[in-house]
Length: 401
Image (cartoon, rainbow, N blue to C red; front, side, top):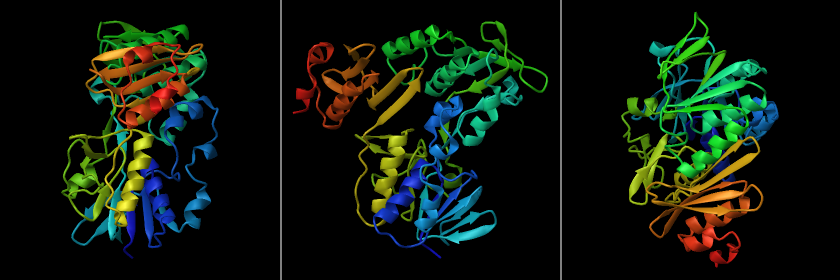
């Protein structure tokens, strides 16, 4: 049959297929997904969907009829098990599917607790798929005791849901502070305070010795020897890129599936995009775990499959919703040596990351205006005077000129 085969039916895979059709590609497109559901959004799983504020059909990236209308063949609940680069075929549940171009949008999977510390007990969950969240949803009833392992955004979002639904929530983080890997101390302090105000108990510098229970988790022994009663556990200790198929096919791996600036792997007929792909960025190489990257990179790959030869230039942005706080992040803060705080109106505040005189990134809490202006400045390579940023009476809009 040939055509284009996409392994992975998440945000990147769906964006790639839709872009190919919008560009006028009329060849065969086959998208293979391990989950039985058509492509859907993952971020709301740990927010609105878990809270019961978002119905299943609103999660779908496109109406299910879209894929048939666009003549995209969906193979859902299907496992791609091998790539034959010589024959240019993919093995899927015993069937061989041929390709002219192959795209790997396999995403990532959450790290799990090892069995040695009780990770195999029932009642221990990760947050990644629709099935994960559907399985844990019945656990969220008022008064129950929830332990969250990991103080990153997934853990904090789950804590916020638990607190809003009336659970007793304890969150443990091995590092000296929550969000240490991804944010400045100022942002950590902001969210620690927000969670404390909602009754969440955050224990930093605290690891998990082991979970206890007969078959189902019922308690936890922490690294300081404390023992606590637990009804269920959510683990948010990071994700790893899904590279097994690529590795077994002999593709180059470097913190994910290694691609060039166009999104092409070490095999010129195979491409990669989204969480699973690492790519050149400002003289180095990065891998981004975000919706924005999945969409933008996949759309560039679609163009390049059709001959555009357009390098991908990442414009990183992220977000998190916790309680009544909308956090919006622009840029990458790696290497910052200074934080400039800008107080907005009401409860709005933003933290701007500088390296010397260069603006790298910002975290904006309930301040969409600061976020939009900061994002445009970062993308334009402009670095405003920190004194102007710190002055709450200063109008930022002229900085864009």
